Amino acid sequence: MLDIFSIQRTVEKNFPYFGINKKNEIIRLLYEISKKEKINFLKITRDLKGRDFSFIKKILLERRYPYTLLKEKEPRFYLPILDIQPENKLRIKKFKLYPKKIYFEKETEDLSLLKRFKRFFPRAEFIQIETLKDYLKAHGYTLKDYNLRKESFFIVKEKYDFLKNCPCTKDALNCGYSILNLGFGCPYECIYCYLQEYTDSAGIIFSGNLEDFFRYFKKFKRSSKLRIGSGEFTDSLFLDDITQYSVELINFFRDYPDIYFEFKTKSKNIDFLLNAKSSKNIVISWSLNPQKIIKECEFYTADLKERIVSAVKCIEAGFKVGFHFDPIIYYEGWQYDYKELLNYLFDKIKEDSILWISLGTLRFNPRLKKIIENRFPENKILDEELILGFDGKLRYPKEIRFNIYKKMLEFIRKRAKHLWVYLCMEERVIWQALKEFGISMKNV
Image 1 (spheres, rainbow, N blue to C red):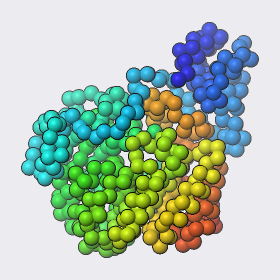
Image 2: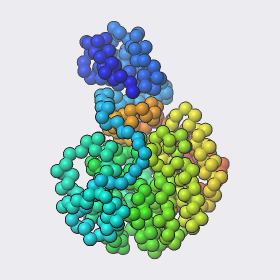
Image 3: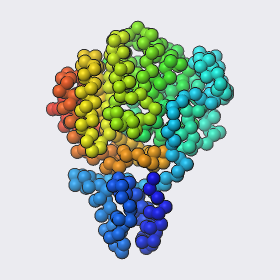
Image 4: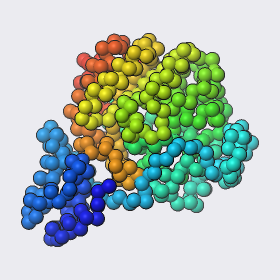
């Protein structure tokens, strides 16, 4: 990792007449340029000493964001204070999912999920709490706690957020998705995961009262063609052999043929699910990226081949499948890896077995940037040009995003002429611009 202290010390020495905010912006830009270009920051500062701040910032921005400054009219940059604490770095070890402590709300002590957890995790310490809300009030939360979240499970009784509309980003075209809240948190370590910034719980949460959702849904006023999924705040299948949610959900939604229910995952944990009789309205979906990205950015998840093999098994069992290229990661040569991935996918799976594909480029709340830097200081995804987008999230410049979608659609349409392909959390102007390239603005 770069010697941040040396950068800070050099800026203090060379530019003592600048205010603290100006110094922090110079430190941030020097760090990012040095990291991306793999050069000593002193080579950058050599010709800057004695210059005024406006000149220095202009030179550094042009070096850090050359494409953006060439293509964007009024780009908005995000240059937070550089604050990377070594103790927050995640140590990637051999994957093991066995909680040390399992907390359960008082109301869940008779639920079958708690009994299964006791059977599968006999060495864990089981601790009764009044409510999760009370527990969170009494305990602090830090980034180091998030790194240890696999050591603590929480079993709760969900009462309020059974079903909600997908929290689509501000000013984006909504794809009409709804979320079934079966839990919160995931044991996988995807560098870009928004849960790192979104969560406030030092553990993984499981809802134990699925039957209450079924009672709620029977009375729920809904439209037809509703799409519901359980993979927004957690991975739908990572612990399905223990939670055993999948069979109950499949059996329930089989009686609602006008509704699609989706299990979204990065795992290969499908064996329990395959015990259920298939139904045409049940979709098993995988998030996909080239193996290069899986290896560098999606730690502990199933590799690409394992995900595709799992999808084939589900198809053979009678299920439909879906795929989410989200987030698409931009880097030099990205298009060759994604083309190879799509050809591999369509070599193994026919178009008529796939119900939908979604496309979404990398984007995240600005607060997540510093979290990624702390947990994954050697990451490469932050080296690309990410600026504040239409919704205030960090995104690639608009033209890069458009070209990514255009190229992906070209790859897909060569192999799948009629497949429904939609964008996730993207602005309407890009949807409109892509209509001629095969994007669909209608639902399934």
